[in-house]
Length: 78
Image (cartoon, rainbow, N blue to C red; front, top):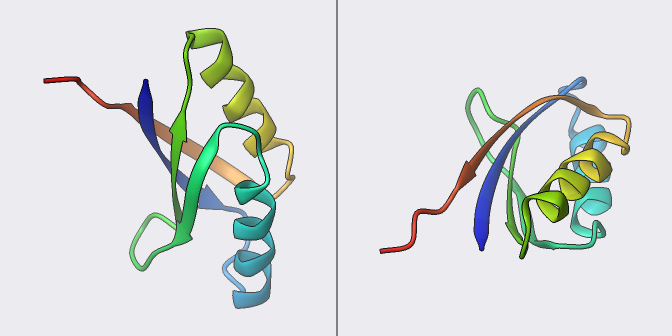
């Protein structure tokens, strides 16, 4: 399965955003992560097989210590 995780950070400084993106990209299950303009700071694309796996991915993203909140959108297969 695939999901988009919309991430807001605790800091808005460029260097902090760069560090957060680098750390999030290292999380197992994260396919890509990019900083974006707007009310969301980072969008991560993740792949997982079970809901336990996506739960662990989200926990690992929070474990970076720079995440204020997330909004996960699981892709609906058509």
